[in-house]
Length: 371
Ligand code: UDP
Image (tube, rainbow, N blue to C red; front, side):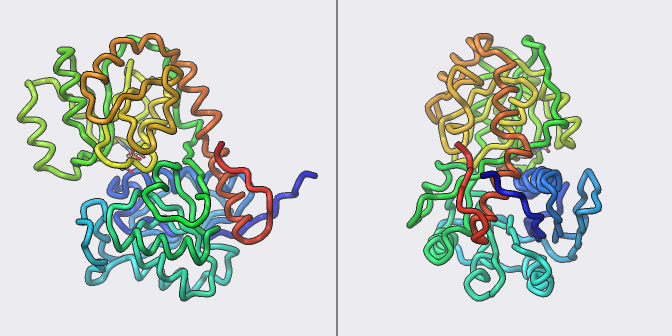
């Protein structure tokens, strides 16, 4: 029996770390934008509550945006394990949630994209159904604990991007994995097998840019680098310790320009030093037909099928990356694009999220999530 889709009214609450388009929110920004488009294509009505300045690259009669002014939240990425919850004076985070609590009775469900304590805790004390797409591994004890509690109380209201990411948390139930998704129309397939090497991500220590620079240096080649410089000291340390001209800084580009340049690469290198929750840039590279060589740490291990769309290498094994780059021509660029279209388009992602929400609202008992 085929279930008939019912239109859902969903309130999506954006990351409080920066406005959409600032780059400060990292991969979550693109996740939200792609998901909104995917959910609208499925016929749902969306209200986005986001920090002031946020912009979406499309419009729809099924989309309403509420913008809230306030100070950016600090990211948990750079807190120490035992650090307490921080809420700065005039922070946008509680302001976002004041609006959500006020308006939530007009929606079937609220989906939270903030990796922060307050929205998770509110789930315990509010009548409204708040669903959380957890976007990071467990970097701090207080976050690990609140995720554990919500899993015990409302297991169907938590989802993760990958199984590996979810393993960071103490969960009582089998985790709901929704993967991630990207707008297929935004990424063009590029056939060129002879381009340069590329790397992209926030320029911050957990992303391990220095290892990719070593690989490029050993090959005597340039490395094209895209991304927001989050840690200036770290960026200049890498710049100063590499030979002149190895790093070609491309800056932080909007998706359309980013993918155009990315697609010219013959290989994309991804060198995380932490349990990467997903790794958007890996899939964006594949979307353009670019094979990826990555450390087998977190998300990359579930996105790269060794020998099909790239190669997986032991974490910190720079020589392993070098070796894999030398045999990159054995990967068919078309396979990378095909993998993307099948597993990580915004449509398949939105479908998985729709199933998750319906399940959480007790509307559909057949859960068809990521395989
Ligand atoms: N990105 C971008 N322009 C650039 C370089 C990167 O928009 O020039 C975006 C990219 O599309 C991705 C995000 O930056 O969505 C990085 O996300 P990822 O999941 O790789 O890592 P995170 O920052 O979330 O840890």
